[in-house]
Amino acid sequence: MTQHHFPESFLWGSATAAYQIEGAATEDGRGPSIWDTYSHTPGRTLNGDTGDVAADHYHLWQQDLDHIAELGLGAYRFSVSWPRVQPGGAGRFNQAGIDFYSRLVDGLLERGVRPVATMYHWDLPQELEDAGGWAERDTALRFQEYAAGIVGALGDRVHTWTTLNEPWCSAYLGYASGVHAPGRTEPAAALAAVHHLNLAHGLAGRVVREVAPAAELSVTLNLHVIRPASDSEADRDAVRRIDALANRAFLGPMLDGEYPADLLADTASVTDWSFVRDGDEKLIAVPLDVLGVNYYSSTLVRAWDGASARSDADGHGASASSPWVAAENVDFLPQPGPYTAMGWNIDPPALTELLLRLHREYPSQPMMITENGAAFDDVVSADGRIHDDRRIDYLRRHIGAMADARAQGADVRGYFVWSLLDNFEWGYGYDRRFGIIRVDYDTQVRTWKDSAHWYQRLAATGELDQPAE
Image (cartoon, rainbow, N blue to C red; front, side):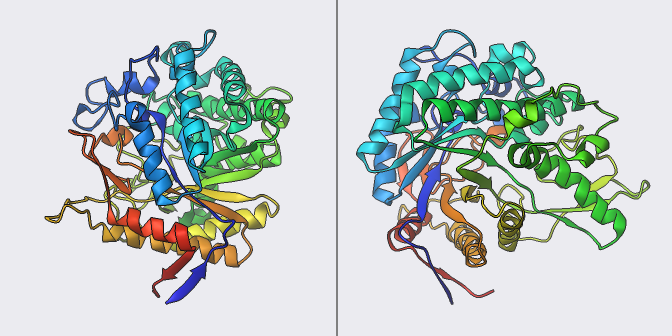
């Protein structure tokens, strides 16, 4: 057994997202989001599931906060529903929506839990999408106004403000492959969305700096670990091309203050990037207190030979359109198991690799794991418990991988398990369960899985026993 010990200062938390758990989709003045529209469109989600009720967190939030406190967690990462606090995405704010999050934040503080608020976890107000969505610059400007409203309302009671969650998904899955809301398949719009999401981050981050200077500022990126199928020059170039789209399209402007030249060259056949205006990249590069890193699985690519059948096993949902803009010459290969219920490979060493890369390239940038977890086919046993040993093993190995990176110098200061609760898993509806707490969607009863008890012990002791490989 390899023993890992985490200091008392290390932050243990859990994470959720508004549309996935809140429900109350039409209550108290909430407006429609792109995910309301998308999930209510036949054929878009598994079984036609929607987030109309979800885990009913809007009504059961006090109970859920009690679970967080009982777990002994130091922080809770939640997202604010933009259409709940500003239904049209511009103009009037909805006081009932703001009051809900104010009560939530106060409830966390009363329980000794740090509030970590994500401003945007994919639920764009539908009115803004009707005007062009993230493909339009105006959406970033509206986001700045929304940020001013919600940061002003909650002030510095929020410990950490996270501007965006996984802008890669918002841009490429929403506007290129169409497997996420708003379901568009327009490669040029996807690249415009990349930039306008980056710009929104910079504008909102500067709002936080001005309005709540005592709060920490963050962004959460789902950074990809991409490996070549061989050491050939062509396969290594395939890695470079995908790395530009997946990682450096966001890390470049956010942390380096510029887009990578190879990204612009690779995508020149799709767009001339004229939507990037003078001064934008400087605006985007607002200094971060912490970089949020989401990690679930790794990626294997090769250069397509132009003749064999294409392979698109990238783990991001089936679509006739690819999220990988201008990368038609790249194959995404199936990887050896084991797999989670999402079909994602389980690869803990890749997390160590990712964190050490970030430490090497940005040595002064603190990090947190803001999402990591797994969906499995949980079964309620005869004893009424959920013995999710595979999830515990997944978490143990990935937290161990994070500890290995810390031991080699990576400044990783916290870990947020995904997810606190079973929830609406986007296009997969309620079929995939990520929670350490089970939700019975018929009764809304919450039941701790074995993984919750395991995580409670870890948070209390900081001691992790990592089985030898």
